View 1 (cartoon, rainbow, N blue to C red):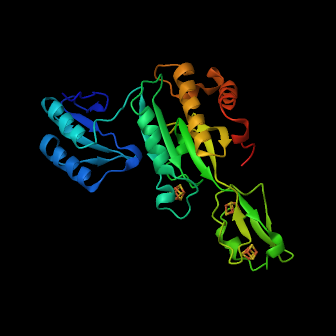
View 2 (view 1 turned 180 degrees about the horizontal axis):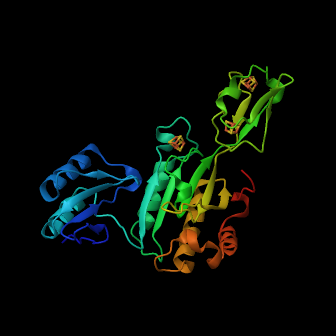
View 3 (view 1 turned 90 degrees about the horizontal axis):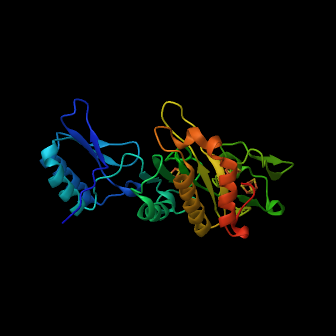
Length: 290
Ligand code: SF4
Ligand code: SF4
Ligand code: SF4
């Protein structure tokens, strides 16, 4: 017997039908699953489906009597009802190393792993997690309750530089400049996006290993806020540990009700949360600055 959760069920205006939000970790579905969603929507929903801003799909206009059968069909399809209330409602990811040439980390496997651990878990506040593999932040992860951003720090070897200036064109931050025939990096301007790495035809710009910036307490909506930096770490394992501790701290310390995490960070002691996260991480995994 398949248990159908009711958390991804949204009552529509007029209260006569429901919109069903699906669980689609990192926005990835197979073509067969997509066909399955289309079939289910056609059979149990209205005339359309809705692609959401958070990489999921909604099936609108479902009558109450169709909810159980739709739930069974979607669960069999591997795209069950999602979550909407005080839960972990969504884990999004950019294509990352799998497909984007600007990526610094493997965003999709990371997101799928987090989704397996946390999706649907009850929390005091609605919790969204986003992972972008570079600071271009294509999934707006810093506007999520927990965000992960991959960075790459360029390393220069000026003794080999010809001063040709090719790499300068790749930096959108004006952080690279040829001075007296040698490449110079402006640390203040560099956001560690990694776009310049490997652009030098002479191999003058290489990179350190990627680092993971974890942010906490962002939000979208009518008063958007960028999440605060919780920690920067130098390995996938440490990034997962940092996310685990961030989630635990939300679970233990956030105040339930209608307020979002972003609006209670000072009240619940953000600085103390940073200390708790640092205490859980191996010392040599923490990076002081980007
Ligand atoms: S965030 Fe960066 S790595 Fe991810 S898709 Fe956007 S540009 Fe590519
Ligand atoms: S890492 Fe990005 S911001 Fe820094 S110098 Fe290279 S291109 Fe510019
Ligand atoms: S592309 Fe290479 S050689 Fe040319 S300025 Fe940049 S670092 Fe120097």
